[in-house]
Image (cartoon, rainbow, N blue to C red; front, side, top):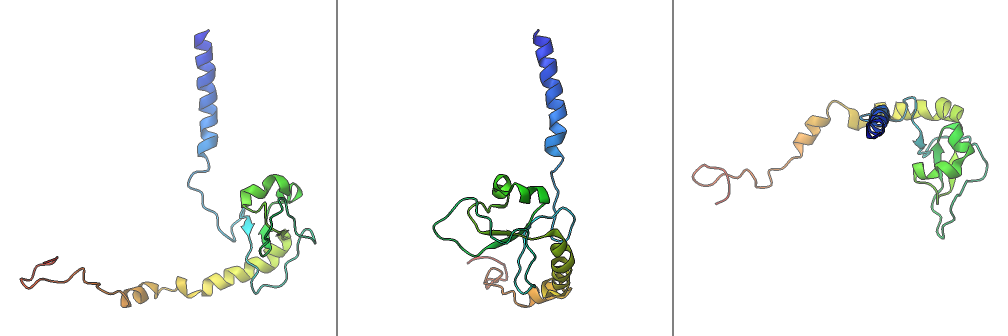
Length: 148
């Protein structure tokens, strides 16, 4: 009896372990398939949204700026179940349409990132030019480093 319980528990643990560890080390960013999350509209054209009115799951006393989110279709249909995953339950949320995201937002966003000076090859040289010693490498009168 104890052996069968132990065998069942071991079998259950062995089959559940790969499911828990399969997503470790995965990083997805804007532009990659499977990315869903906040869309910074900024200077982009007005987004095409799924619903005309913002979705608010939990009312707050002070409402901030509305959020524009790109989410899978099944999350949009049952937003009240998935808003916690996006930290947006108490926010005014506009869900953008996937075709607008793919056609209008994504190409311009990728183009902006490619021209952003942070990704320029000269960045390392620029960082070294403004570094200051701050006195950590001062030499003592006897030529040794460190405090006196």
